[in-house]
Structure formats: structure tokens, C-alpha cells
Length: 123
Image 1 (cartoon, rainbow, N blue to C red):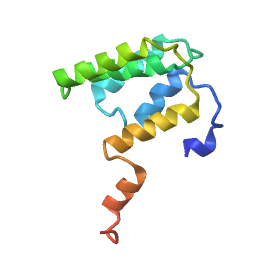
Image 2: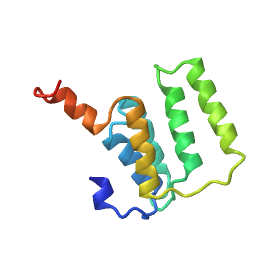
Image 3: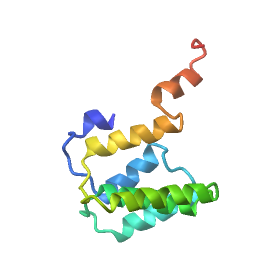
Image 4: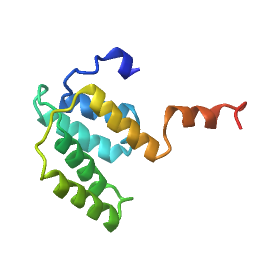
């Protein structure tokens, strides 16, 4: 729905990024949602969302999660160190939604998969 409602080249703000991560169910742990809401309240509403900022946000949330392991921590550290070699870029809704879609696919939460699980007619 967001892909239709919001023009693809619309700049993403940190506040929009955080709300979308929660709405899409990418972040659903109540403690992590509280942490995101705090971050959203602290950042000015016009703060642009960036690729490195998104990875740092997700990495910070992952580190706070009781489900994360040392391997997860190392993976995010590696990703962040690789990103250091590149200039940061502001995110648009199109780019952000693409990242969100890939995150949902990697966890098996694509809308089509969810529909198939709940549709008694599908096999």
C-alpha cells in the first residue's frame, strides 16, 4: 500500500522509517518498539533517514534483542565496517521499501507467504 500511496522518490525521514518498521512488523518486540519510539521522539521530525543510519538502527535493535547471538553481533559489525568505505546516502521511500521487502522475505514474512498460510484453499 505504501508503494502506491507515497511517491517513490519521496525522501524518507527517521520518524517515517521508524513508524514503517513497526507497521510492517519488521520490529515487533515491545521493548524494541519503545526504543524506536524514543529515538523518533529525540530526532527532529525533518531528520533524513540514511542507509548507514538504517543499518545502525537495525544493528542497535538487534543487539538489544534477547534473541541475538554473538554471530549476529559480528555480522552487523562487519556490515557497518564495510559501509564505512562508501559515502552515506539519504533514503527514499522506494529504496527503503525495497530493503523492507528483502528483510521480510528473508524472514519468510512476505505478504504472499502470509496469505498462503492463512488461505485454507492453498496447499
